[in-house]
Amino acid sequence: VYAQAQLSISGITDIARNIKTQQLALEQAQLNLDSVKNDIIRTVKKNYYSLLSAVRAVKIRTQSRDLYKDQYERASEYFRLGLRPKVDVTTAEVNLNNEELSLIRAKNLVKTASAQLANTLGVTTPKTLDIEDIISFEKFEMPFNQAVQTAYANRPDVLSAQADVRISHIKLNQAKAGFFPTFSFSAGYSKYGDDFSLDNEEAKLMASVEIPLFNAFKTYNGVKQAKISLENTLNTNRSLLNNVFLEVQSAYIKMQEAAESI
Image 1 (cartoon, rainbow, N blue to C red):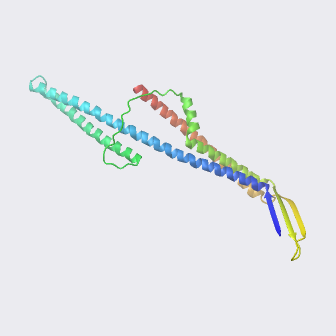
Image 2: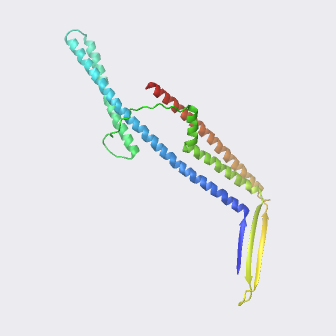
Image 3: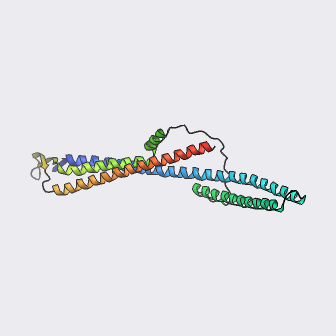
């Protein structure tokens, strides 16, 4: 009867690194899912307000059309009474026709915006969606620097990029581990004898050290590649942070402009 157990210190370290890498990969997968959800929310909001804007534009164009129609009727009556020249009637008619065309385009825009919103919601309907009109306005009071830091702390793409950096660090440490000796411990137990009695026992405890003398060049190249990968990941992360800063700045300026316009 023989039993043996073996333990490698470097193997335990590799397992711990692999577990951490897989945990970060799982975290990235969740962040990617959150990013998809955020994109859907953003698209739904954008199409919702586009439809709302189109509906309001129809109301404004309808009122404008009615005003131009009234002007045309007044000009026609003044011309009939001899109080205005024919050119006033022609101008009023052109203005009315142009506004009629703008109203037609505004109504078509409502249909298009409704179809886009329905598609975003996963709904198929030939009818125009009936949405609630939101007329409230609350001024955004968050300072710009705080808005940027909030984006850095909450955006899934930024958090995913940070996880990439941590994974690259783990892979670099794993590559560097190839330079160090490998320590292993093993223990064995055996019991033997003749066919009728196992009277003899033997136990073994061994320790071994493996020094990577002939793999140094391979390990060196692996470390160099891991460093390059880490540097690329850091550059990608810095580029992403710059893009996020620009997006927040652009949105912040547009929001201020919209608030002043209101």
